Image 1 (cartoon, rainbow, N blue to C red):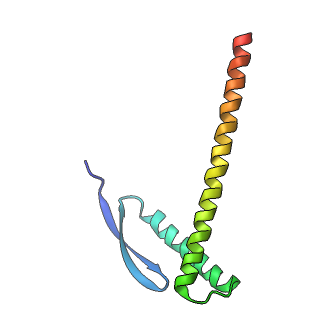
Image 2: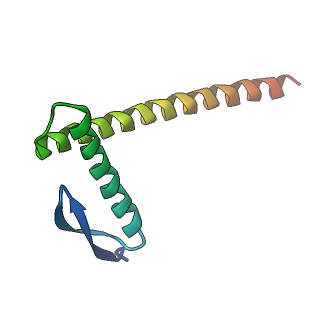
Length: 95
């Protein structure tokens, strides 16, 4: 059965857009739009970028960089957990 979707109105760069999203995920979409708007404003204040499209691109790049860093951190933590489980398994086999 296909998931139900709802139309959500989101404001980005001062313009209103309609997006479809899975029912129950509307607040997450709105939060994501708010985060993006905040990052764009930050880019416009912190850098020489004044053009909204360039600020949007810079904000998107920063968000992607943050995501990559979190994914790398998660991967490292998963590997460390796997190593600990393997060590624990060897320890339990010895006893």
